[in-house]
Length: 80
Image (cartoon, rainbow, N blue to C red; front, side, top):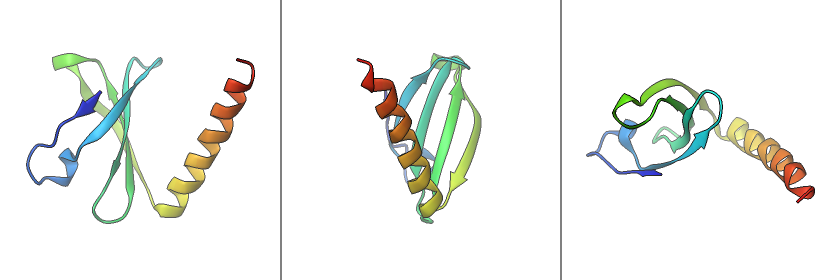
């Protein structure tokens, strides 16, 4: 799902969410204007959806984390 822009507030920048299994909800990555990435976990859905927690990563940590996720996703797909 893609969440729309709501004005100029950087907390409301466009971001794509992905459904999570546990906890049930969605996860998103949002690029912040100060040069960091914010990973947000939402729980619930629809009107009951709320931000459960978020973390911020600097450029290097975000890159390393992304590479780690790609390696694991690749291994999951090898058996298909």
